Length: 90
Image (cartoon, rainbow, N blue to C red; front, top):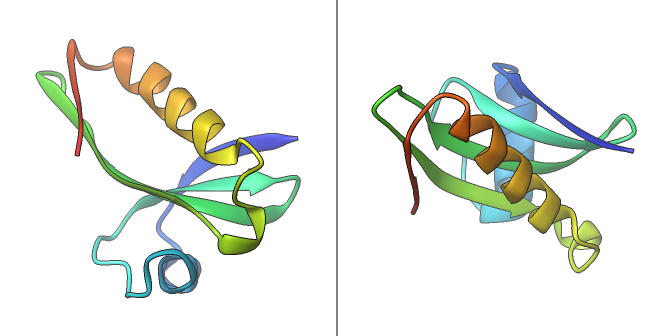
């Protein structure tokens, strides 16, 4: 089962970011995609009532090509549409 949740666990965010983007995570909060209890994806978004922006979305290399990125992106967009009228994908 796939699910996602926000976190401020800097160690988790950095580990995922290094695995996916080859760099440290530069913010305090990120959204993590889980397959059961395993963290498999990471997203950075900016969410405000006026406009929300998807800044980064990534899946760990071993879990790519399974539709997780599509699920994660669509789920984030759906949740962001509840907050903002304008949504940008960077």
